[in-house]
Amino acid sequence: MSLTPPPFLQLRNAVVRRAGRVILTVDAFELACGENIALLGPNGSGKSTFVKLVTREMLPLHRDEPPVLFKGCDRATLAEVKRSLGVVSSTMQEQMIVHLPAVDIVAGGLYGALGIPQAVAA
Image (cartoon, rainbow, N blue to C red):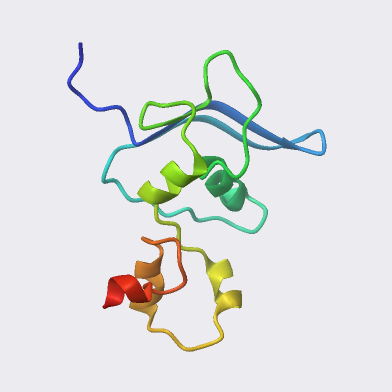
């Protein structure tokens, strides 16, 4: 029995299709607990699809061996994932109607919100 915890996130042979066309293929990806990454790439390269795959807003094609494991579990709920994952996206800019300091916007990713929620800031 291994005492090493499973990776925070693991993708193996994950394929996402839309309208019958493959739009993203991830052969192998692991993210350890506490590790941080940034997704960079041109428009249309699959960054948003990758994030939606991770957050379970989009599901991969079925495989006998689950293609996405979250903390070792293949059936994590969206709520479980969002409690453990902070996502900051440039699309949030469209939602900003007031000026917020950049640090508040980035920190808001920890809470899945635009800026730091008042209950936390108090």
